[in-house]
Length: 145
Image 1 (cartoon, rainbow, N blue to C red):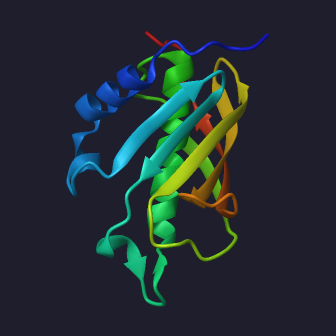
Image 2: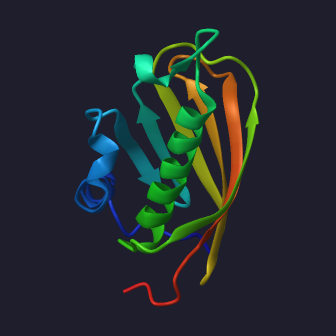
Image 3: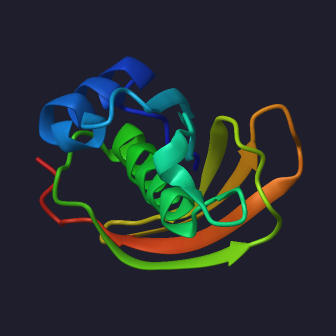
């Protein structure tokens, strides 16, 4: 049985704005682009603070985007549960990203009562080549109300 999103893209974005306003301290660099059945898409605008020596996007910037995309995808599929938390994330940095907007595609492989397991693939906008691949697990509180 396929799960259906219980929150729209706009509802997820509003929840993040309300519960995690700190993600916008540098302006609105994160954008929820879409949500679907066990899937989500998010993007991040790149600025000078995300560039590391060698002229590439820093690992921590891509890690933040992956974690946020994973969280937004889970929210879209279970509802506004602020206490869903990361329990594990593993990253493979595949190639140097271009210095333009990054796009994260998230796919949940399992969405159970207590755990969500999924993957996030990040690419530079306009390119199909992935620059980062992350896998992870989130703990979902049993009381989702």
